[in-house]
Image (tube, rainbow, N blue to C red):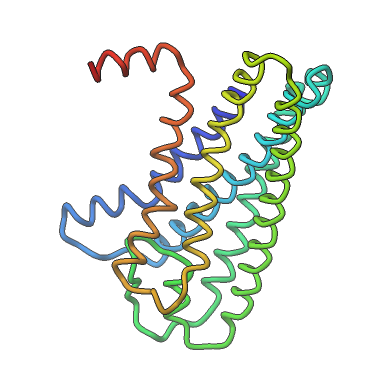
Length: 248
């Protein structure tokens, strides 16, 4: 679990470092510009970190499933080599998806100005500047990615259905509490991440406005990396004791 949390922390660090520093520097220096290559790099890393994070959360759901539903096989199924391969697959899936989306997005012709109505280079906002029908292949790439994300979501849901069935069969309340405390932080992180991304993707066009788009972008790009470390840290007894002392 801690190996996967290390990878998740690195993804969070990369995700929040992609758009926020540039936005802060623009605010401090009162500028609103970014180079073409800088915009492409920003889009690449945003897609890379977000999709790699989602893949890693799917792997972590499998890790929780094996730990609770097949504990006697945990050492075999989740050995060090298997964990490294799963983490590498999560990073690789994010990288390949980022290459696909960046190449497709910046292969279209732009003739609707050069103003991106967002605090970072986001695919929907960039496509608004397109003036050709070639953006359809970008849409198809987005559809394929959405199907993969939905498949991961179904896998996570099925894993937790099996987990909760196994936990409810545990005779002791202490054992149930231990199992739930091991799974609930991950479930909270998945719920936060998936709900913000889905809301951003499925938001009706009639509700679209510059202010709402900005709030939604902050929700899925800034809030999860900021809140997730707190969710997992609350499992640490020393941290909870320090938090109680601070509140008192």
